[in-house]
Length: 377
Image (tube, rainbow, N blue to C red; front, side):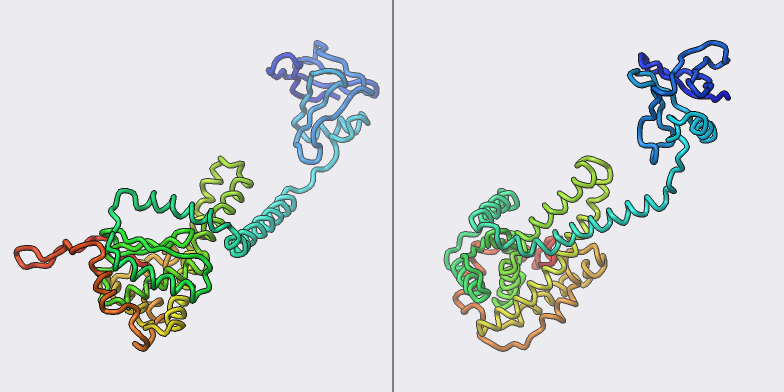
């Protein structure tokens, strides 16, 4: 019996085409023409290397030598397996690939789902345990990065008014640490919460508000983020997802890059959930203190008036915030309760950044608004 094969002599990587003849006692390797003997391997010294279950053509070697013999054709391997018992492994049927792929895929899916659930749910338990000092340092670092060279408002009376209300709201939410509000001069019309109870407001938001109750509604919303530890939860979740992707891809493959889309979707979904929680908490805290809670919905209405085309509604799941109309419906309350700020406090807050610079132009026309002034809170 003769069989075509590839022979590696163990000295160079170049393969040599050979033929093979099997007898009961030895495996004879001949040149491609079948006239010259390349090697004679005793049957008792033959070994099949590799994984015969998963490898298509596992190499054959002579024990103690570096040379390799590879036979690609299944029929030739079967014939050798039948004629020489040491090569019987070559004739073992390979299991079907589809069931193995399905089993691997199912196992991977279960592992990823379990890890994902642990990250998504577990972060809610882990985040509050992060030491406050560490959260505060993280918040300070982020604040310095985000605010950069933008000037901070220094009006003492206005800052005292908004910080006083912020800490009363935080106490009502059973948040055990002090919170601080920083007002950045200018825009956009926005506010956000950083780890460690640091709140950043932009003065354009205060200028856009019709009264102090609307600013209080935004403030209570941000305190909702603080009370639910949303800022640090977001960091914990992001870290967990990154570790999952690194475990799956080795940290640098294209799959890891594509996986960032899944990270984005998780972050956006959590963002929408966080915003809804903060909206509900804002109304609850204001009512708990006996303050007017209608400012939450009224400020959203104000944003919708400024920008009738609701970006959150247009881009759907890709938005980090719920649609504005949905938020208005969920937070609408009657105009009952005490004003959040006294008249003196509201007056001080409005000038906390100094005189407003957006006075009417000499022509009498109102100044042009900033293009980003309607960004959702």
